[in-house]
Length: 133
Image 1 (cartoon, one colour):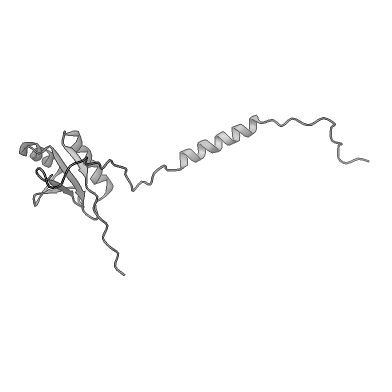
Image 2 (spheres, helix red, strand yellow; image 1 turned 180 degrees about the vertical axis):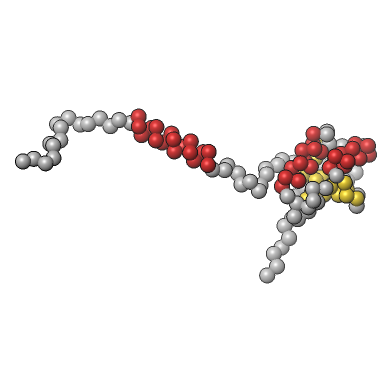
């Protein structure tokens, strides 16, 4: 009495189509569930060109505050009002900085509004404060 069937003499072909289907489904699953960049980071071009700090007028600095408003020349402005004020003052280029607790959405909104209004906006990276022991 034989419990197992004998192996055939010829090799059994491996069917690769189901394997390809499984690999494709796994690939799609991992592509859809993973993030390419961390959400808290945003990649920006911070090129200022070959300009000297000594020549020309200094570029005004605008700081996005924690509440989403912008500070310029010691005054706090809503972003839309600041755009109008900058245009009225003839400013067409600024450095945009952030306070230490500014949310990414507030920074992005301010950056987009200023850039869309025709003001050349450079992102000024704020150094991280040193951690205290």
